[in-house]
Amino acid sequence: MTDDTAPRSFPGSIDICFRKSFTFQGRAPRTELWYFVLFAVLVGIVVGVAVGVLTFAVGINVLWVRFLVDLVMLPASVSVQVRRLHDLDRSGWWWWLFLIPVVGAIILLVWNCSRGTEGPNRFGPPVVVYD
Image (tube, rainbow, N blue to C red):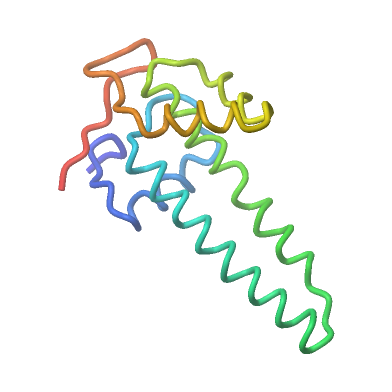
């Protein structure tokens, strides 16, 4: 089973996103992106609660842990977003839209919820997703 025909289950998507952390070529289906977003939110909640408890209740300052977790997640987050834009036949440079307050985030949200292009596009063949 190759990356392009892997089932996009929750653990499978997380695995692919981390293995392709520095791969900005190819395409990523909606499920791959949204499962990774869910994973990032869950990790953020767990780490945030743990850091909060250790910082305020115990008095140990471990805010650097949050920084390290974010640093580890950043390459995978950017690469899956770029590959998702490729699935929509858009350049990965559109990722920079997030810098435009509100409007950029809304545009990226709409695009991320949109169906990818049918068949091959300039970024390669579609990723075959099966259950």
